[in-house]
Length: 372
Image (cartoon, rainbow, N blue to C red; front, side, top):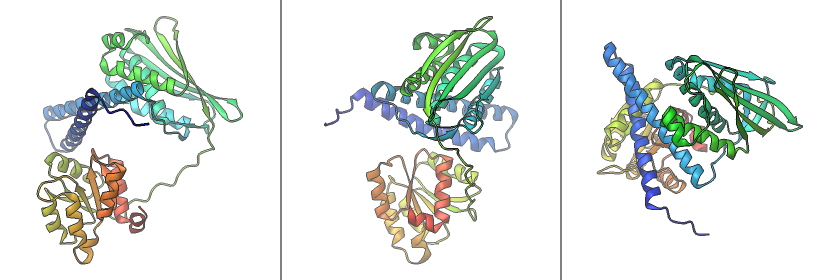
C-alpha cells in the first residue's frame, strides 16, 4: 500500500516542533554552561529562570509530539525487562524537585516483591504517572501528593500493577477528570497535555483507569495494568570509564551548536577545539592530535562528507582519526552514506550526553569502533 502524503499542516507541525526542539536544547546546554561561571546572585537567578523556561518548553514539545502520534497512529512501545521497585525510585527522582518548588511534599511508595520485574515500556509507564502526578501537584496547596505502585501475581507469568496518585492536605481543585480544555483552564497547558498523554498511553497498554473520592475531599487516580513477568534482573557491571580524556575537534558552522558540543565535552572532562567548516577541519586534522572528530554534515565551502574523505586521504595517524557524524539527518540511508565516506558512527542533533559518551568510548576503544 502506498502511504498517503503528509498534509501541509502535519509537515508544518513536524518541522516547526523539531526546529524549536533543537534551539531549546541549545539554550539548555548554554544555560548549564553559564551556571558553572562565577555570576552574581541576580545573574544566577536569571540563568536558572531561562533554564527552567527552556525545560518547560522542551517538555511541552515532546508531550505535544507524542499526543499527535497517538492521535494519528499507534504509539510505539519499547518493551524491556525492568525492576518495578527501581521504576518507582525513578518516578520520585523525576518529580521531587518540581514538587518541592510547588510547596508540595511528594511521597512515593512501592508494595510487592522487591525483586519483581516486568516486561514493560518503563518510559511510557513514567508518563502515565507524570500525567496524574502533574495534576495532583497542581491541585494541592501546602499538602502532599502520594504516588504508589502495588505489584502482585495475577497468573504464572503475569503481574498485576495497581498505581495510585492522591493529593492530600489543602486541596485547591481535586478533580482529575474533564476534557483537555477544562483541565487546561484549571491547571494550565503543560499539566493538561501530560494528563491527556497519560490517558492515551494507558489505553495503548490495555490498562484501566478510574478515580476514587477521598474522605475529606479530592480524588485518587487509580490505574491497573497486566504485564508479562520478566526474569530476575541481575545488576549489570558498570561500564568502564574511558582510559583517558579525549581531545575532540568539533566541526560545525553554527556557533550555538559548537558551544553546545563544547559544553557536553566539558561534562566528561574532555578538551576540545572547533572548526567552522570542512576546510578548517582538514587543516586542523593534519596535526593528528585529535582522538575524535565530531563532524557536521551541511556546511559551506566543504561539507562533512567531503571533509571526511579528505581526512581519510591524509597519511599517518591523522588519516585514521575516528570521525562521528553530527547531524539531524540520521536516517538509515543517510547514515550508510556517512559510513561509506569513512565515519564510524552518527550522533544525532540535538546531542544528548549519553550519546556523546558512547561516541567517546567508541573512539577510545578501537575494537568497539571497528565492530560498530
